Image 1: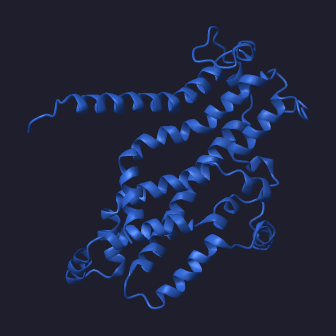
Image 2 (image 1 turned 180 degrees about the horizontal axis):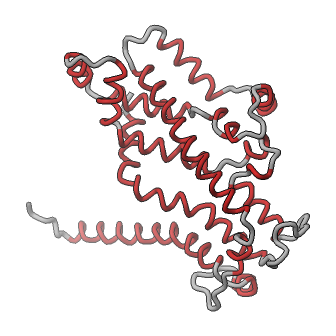
Image 3 (image 1 turned 90 degrees about the vertical axis):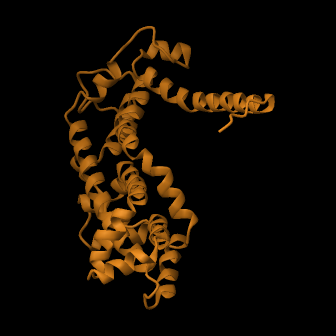
Length: 291
């Protein structure tokens, strides 16, 4: 294979490299700024506004955030809701997507119409709250999972991915004596790991960032997930409605606390993403292109 070393090709390659470096810097620098700002002092952050490397390191923001055991309880709640909710949502989404991907499903178009209809119209906040209340889910962690069990967009991506798999795989499995559940769990799911990993990440991020549902359905502060508690920490750090109930021993460094809160809320997702990155692009593209 002969490498093209023409002047035009080299200019094109160097231009691409330059543009990609600029885009990478634009993407990475805000993260570096947030992390660096969380480890600096409030005085330095107020003076410089934009910090990439602190001249004076400080852990005051993290000491303030972790000065109460409540944060650890909220982290455990968020981890539990994220793990349990992701498994539950993937279970329902896979079953629904597999059923709707079958060509011989009776009333398939009729069912798909009502499924897609929910993407455009829904009951709204008040009717949903009333349903959650009358089903006994208020002040229960299940209120953060059950009302959002299936995301229709994610389910449609899985459905499209299942439809793109060769029919010969299913035919061979039927010849070997597999029923529908055997085909799903032994053939379809193992062949769809890129899409499943991608959708699992979508669901996990959604559950991890749960805020509004917790505000609406959880009156007991002991059940608050980490996002709600972090918001309370920011409010206390800025001096609004400060009563000192849980942070009496640590003065709030208001500027750096906001940055530290961003790090605490974002870091778990950033740690999980590299393990799913190899599946992410392939799963999203294959599931969205083919129908």
